[in-house]
Amino acid sequence: MSLFGFLARPRSAPQARDRLRALLAHERGMAGRGDLIAVLQQEILAAIARHITVDRDKVMVRLDRGETCSTLEIGVEVPHWALAN
Amino acid sequence: MSKVMVVTSGKGGVGKTTTSAALGAALAQAGQSVALVDFDVGLRNLDLVLGAERRVVFDLVNVIHGDAKLAQAMIRDKRLENLSLLAASQTRDKEALTQDGVGRVIDELRGRFDWIVCDSPAGIEKGATLAMRFADVAVVVANPEVSSVRDSDRIIGLLDSKTCRAESGEAMEKHLLITRFDPLRAARGEMMSVEDVLEILAIPLLGIVVESQDVLMASNVGCPITLHNPASPAARAYAEAARRLLGETVPITTPTAPRGFISRLFARKAAA
Image 1: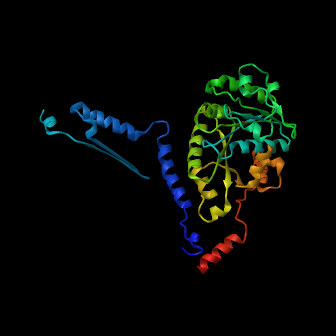
Image 2: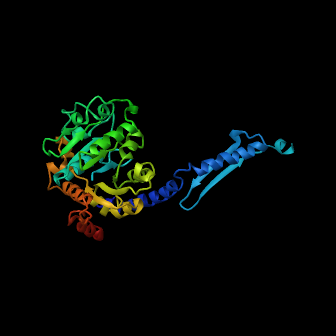
């Protein structure tokens, strides 16, 4: 590292600003109505559970919150015997 | 017409108590009669920052419970006769504050003072919501740092929904006070700029207080900085903020890093 190597440090302020913008856009949106994504997750699982017995250990839930949109991925392992009935 | 002003932030350690003391003193120095009320039940500190810690006999909870008259509990500042303090209680009982009780005390203070400055505890629990509940004006204290700005955003949401003013459909006057600002780090891009914070929080700017040793020295000796070291940049920022609260138009200048350093920085960069 050169004597003035510290000058090459990346500017972190823009990152702070951008992360906050994304986060607050999300938090402001859900103010007062709880976490919509969490509600969706529960209701989707409840709907599936009405038709087949869902083993909680065989359910995969993945959430990715983005700036403009979020993705909620729900994977349910359905055994063949459940479909046969 | 008296005004009730809450000094709030959500996050702890950003400078609410220092700001309450400094703005309260600056308003008193400008000729207003001021009552400072500490809402941080269990962790009071405004008495210490004002140098009145050895004079507290009765506190806010005593007045609410009727154990003491308001006049008995108000501690008059020895340096500024139109500045008084109502200390918080050191009780650990979180239910000590009641909405009715706080409302009655605020009403009584309105009859006696021009300004009632409510120093909010950190967080969004009862103490913080009651500190803002009866306010006409809010000063949101924020540091140019991600967690502080996020919490300030949350607090602004509460000011707009959980206060008497908001519930009766009146506008809540909100001001942003940026504290612990470091011009050098902002210039280097290591700290969010004033513009960044203002754009995100979108409420009017009341002032910018630089990070400074003078602030620590003032609280060490128990004297509001506007009295202890009026010529210091931090004290001037608070005095100007108080004038803005009184309706004066005072232009805000963003503090800049000492001249020479930045140019040296760029000169080095060019040479590297």
